[in-house]
Length: 477
Image (spheres, one colour):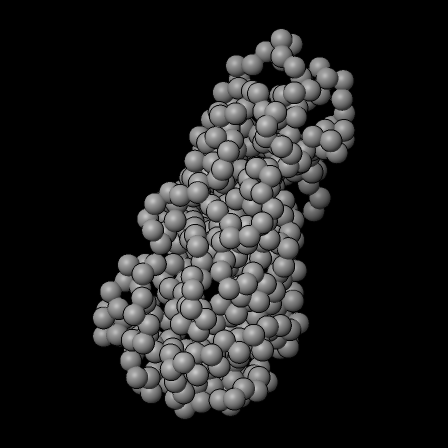
């Protein structure tokens, strides 16, 4: 079996074929100025399933995910927090890493920071200057998109649109230097130091300043994966301008093909609406854990839809994910009892990326994954087998072997979380109804629901991130 994925550049599903003995994967990571939300983590979870699937297929991987730790948001955040840029971004990096741990994401082989690779970025800009693709204006350096004839090939963008329209879609056009550009579509490679940047700057041949966002990824991917990336992954919102600009920078500077395969993950919505603080529907991993959802259910919900289609995230989806996982772990428990094995043995000996040549029962699961990472179909194959199979009449150890590979690919641990209280579905729905009423200003309705829940033995606690519901007997004032 071989993994086939839709390629944004060619608009077709094609096999993922590495140039060398391993698949070099570059994933655009977070900008570390605050907590990543579940929309971000949909992308990171899908990336994780891709890497795990390749490893289960016996393919070696080199997985790089960057951290953007210098841009307008990080600088502004550090100043508001009265911290150095390094201290500020390190804190939010730690928060991100903890969320990754909660969702059982594999550690990248390399996780470079933009601030650690400044010289590589300067070298790349130098190449573009030397070849006439970039120019200096008032101490800032810009990429001249009219000089790169293939600009727009990834997003099917008409180059003339970028050059004539005064939007910020071509990249950071709200710069104070925008009227000093040759064309409004040209994007910044190096930003001239400004008073509001404080002490965040580096020396360069063009004066003191800091890198533009796009140049960071081009430099880091080349530094750790070489001239050509086998698979470049990110959210669909990065296709233009970020990934388009990466192609232009990298191929203009060094020639060749920057990335052989492009994978973009569709948006996440909450209850059919765009996620935002103003709507009160912006969720983080931590806020969902506070609501007593298991980390496995959060991960399951984020990967359950096909990555090329928008995911409508709802609490009913989380509840359904929790129920599906309980069924899967109950099946695992029965299997272990039949095989007379412990869950620890399963974790140590079965839960791993193993060879698929001995798969007998769950072939359809892996075939579905290889078909453009069709996780919904793969899960359907898995649960059809779980629901229909008679453990007593099958080889329990063989099923454990195959189930172990499935769970590795899905990123599910051997132990289902027990640190979160299992809350009945009607109680979850009532707490969500109360929260929505409160957000809408219907405080009487919210109080009425709270009192009903108290009579049922559940205490609702409002928190900074939303709310938490706990059994009344465990409540401590």
